[in-house]
Length: 94
Image 1 (cartoon, rainbow, N blue to C red):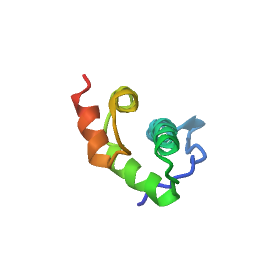
Image 2 (cartoon, rainbow, N blue to C red):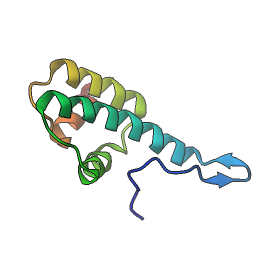
Image 3 (cartoon, one colour):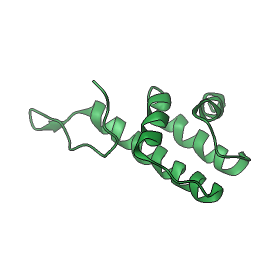
Image 4 (tube, rainbow, N blue to C red):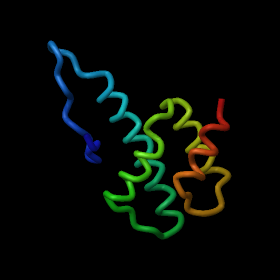
């Protein structure tokens, strides 16, 4: 089943939000926030499809590593990144 790009409403299981959906939503907020900054710097326009591509490439990584890697790329990157560029920086972060 394909993930939606918009922040999904919580999945309720016995009165509790699914931790998997919560984790995905947190990653989505972080990734889209940084992509918006990268796009603003490079004069690009983001589309729902681009967000989907980046999330697909990064969603298996830990949130902590994603945040740290995206911040590093913001400070050190020299061009708008491909998903592989971001994965490389994120995977280097420990």
